[in-house]
Length: 433
Image (cartoon, rainbow, N blue to C red; front, side, top):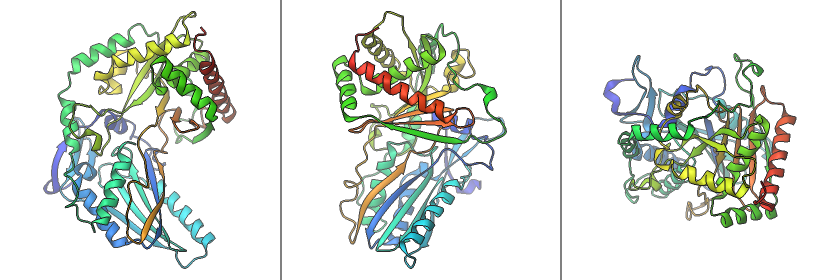
């Protein structure tokens, strides 16, 4: 990297450190942390204006111009370049019949998804403009998760479309709050207090909670990710939401407790631990709700219970314990595991995906074009062998991603079924032991 082109260098956020730790992957395999957003338009879209808007977005947010380097013997850093043009590709299939165009579109999306980013070479996001028959087009935004979290995605698209409406100029937009403000906030945290809190929380833990055995997968092969889904009936979703409200907890906490109880059944233990993602956006940091970047962190949840404890009591205690750790969720997972005396605490991850995404509100006026649909987003798979994602909708959606080398599809389907049965029991009778 040419030193003359460097604007600044910053430390990493906790999860960025985790990504770099897991980025020693086989460079010939697909990168599970690359994700795509698809914006489908109808009507005449100005491709030149959209490309200018993408470049303006790069100028507004320094962290979108960052590459990640690990100097020998030193801590890894993110290096921001002074100027980085947005990655941009165009394809024109307007002259093909609809079926041929759809096949070409799907093949291009897949090829782009499989094309890896080199983390030391920004930009780590790129744009593809696909022109389709019948006056349609699609903008594909492909990014590495080390840059963006789920909350940032609608903010990024909202800005991109506002810049498009302004012809690529950002004079009408408020000044962006820099991601470096958050990194500075991280450096000011009391690390000793965080270590004390996590050490006390995990004290007495007998060992990790692991479902996948090391010998089950070929370590020389890339993980074969697969995913199953389950949509809960509206009646059950409403019952769970009602129970959470009556118990004074969040739906997120209620689902976490059920997941922990299932892990306990599988491990024949009443003291289990699993990972969750936390938002990581400190309320005391001005403008944090509009900042674009990676704020989330992965931290452990420990669930303990006695034979006579009620589900309601367990869920309430779980929320109180997590509330006591809110000020310490910035500590990186490697350090937390070290405090517990473990190299690895868990191999399952629970994600509650709940961030605002109103595709119509973000694009009220695009001239002769209209935004019809936004899809994709955080559909990447984690490096954990088993990841449960819950998406709150009218009918709660559950997605269970798994390493097909370590888990049989039938076993994973059974886990989803058992989880649903457990949720039905929790919703029906929270006073039961």
